Image (cartoon, rainbow, N blue to C red; front, side, top):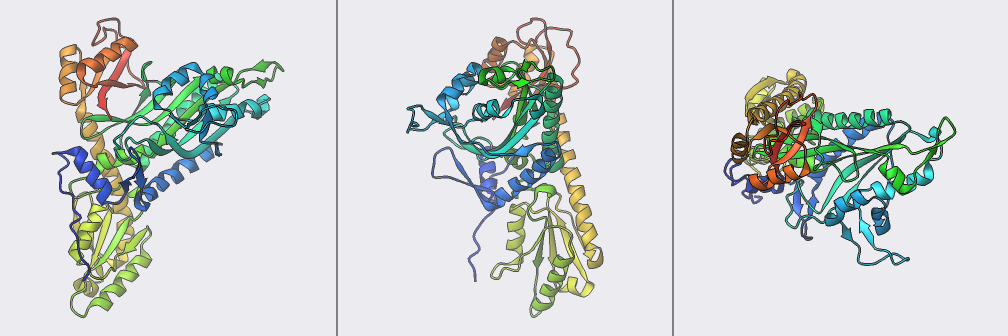
Length: 477
């Protein structure tokens, strides 16, 4: 008999979310800690979730004319120095290679790739006919900013994609900067069932070197915001710094307009925090590597008949499924194992089910259980998967809406901070004021200026100066 070890979650989500989160990640086999401090190992089960994200986003941006490429991870120090604001913004996060290059220059491990990519663009772009140039790369990133890894949320190395586009006109650049943000919304809401707020970052929170940064912000059950994707309007700053010019239609030299945009494995962490429960992982159906698991429940000499029906069901299902015919494990142990791994649907088949030509369908997020005839099983499973996605997204939206608080004065703002709410307030937009807000509230930062927000017509919630806009504030990871 195979040894059946205790694999369940031992900490409740509502009691100790950091410990609960680590246990879900580790025990569901999404990831593991690495021997290198601040890093993680993405296990096959976790990588298969990331692969679903990659395939979905890659197909969508390819349809927008974006081509994939790959650039070196080593960036000469002089490249950072060409764009002063960008260099200053990443100064504390850059990891340097101990060995210098042949010219005696220090090399950095990429914290982002604007500089190395735009050096190439300065040679590739000559005429307006070369534009727009739309390139994306899937790669790893190194930011030496943390010691203790929070798997998928913060680590010294992580996976992401970064798009870098060049345009003839500012209008085209602005339009597509927002288009890529919408593609991120689709990934996070339509694939991962995480509701987001779309908006613009404040001056303090924008990307180093950008004139505007747009974001999709999630809000997690522990009362912390999570930035899930950003798209940056870079204007012409990097073009000037790297000598990117093109001969225009008027046969005069021009500096192009640029954007960059990125989404990382952090979205997996957001997915875990948003949907999972005290039994373990809950996977949104559209990213689940296994959408349905079939568990045979043989009794006595019924094994062959039970297994035969399980195999028949596996062949007829229209989704990715798995037959758990492992020997030496009880059905109950398998139930717990697959609940821990977050598989959306479990199909149980025992001797009575063989007699009745049915399977017992169990839904992961609600625990609902019912018998379904075999001839209706394929359609029922597909429909339940879609219903589960809608339900997960709807439940998460309700939780986020219930967490929002409109605050009109500093007392209400401080109260919202202590209760870990998502505070919506009038704000002056000044960097110094925002720094004071963070200091005085123990970590409240602006998350975004939501799109379509009304003109404030009042005073900043903190400093009392004339407010420029409404903004959401929250504590963050």
